[in-house]
Length: 159
Image (tube, rainbow, N blue to C red; front, side, top):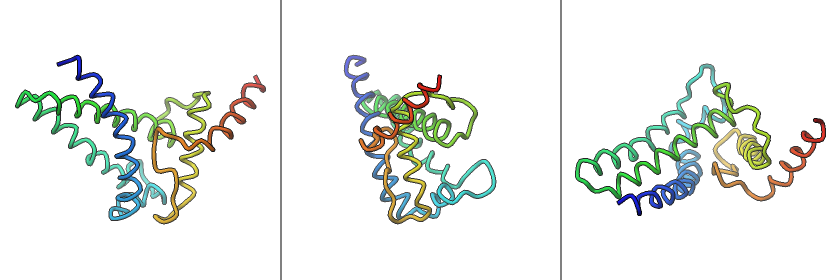
C-alpha cells in the first residue's frame, strides 16, 4: 500500500498545479470573479472573500482522506493527502511568501523564488478579470528567470 501511496501523493501534488491554474484562469477570473476580485482590488481587513477558495480545495482533500479511510480505499486517502500538501504549499508560497500575509519566509534569496514573485506581480498588474497572465503558482514562465537571476546576482554583488 505505501509502495504506491507515496508516488500517488507526489503525482497528485504536481497535478494540482494544473488544477489550480485552470481554476484560477477559468473560474476565479470567470464565474466566481466576485469572490476573487478583492484579491486584485484589495479591501480593508486581513481576510478576503478570495480566502473562500481554500474550502474549494480543502473539501475534496478532506473527503478523499475521510471516505478513503472509512471504506479502506486508500487511493483516495493518498490523493487527499496530495491535495492537502499542495494546499499547504500554496498557503506558504502564495499567502505567506508572495503576499506577505505573515512575517515569515521574507528573505529567500533564490532565483526560482524571485522569478515566482515577479510572475505573480505580473499577474496582479491586471486589476480586472480580463487580460490576466501567469495563473499558476509553482510553474514559472521561463522569461521571469532571466530577470530574477539578474536581480539575484545584483543582491549577491552588494554583499
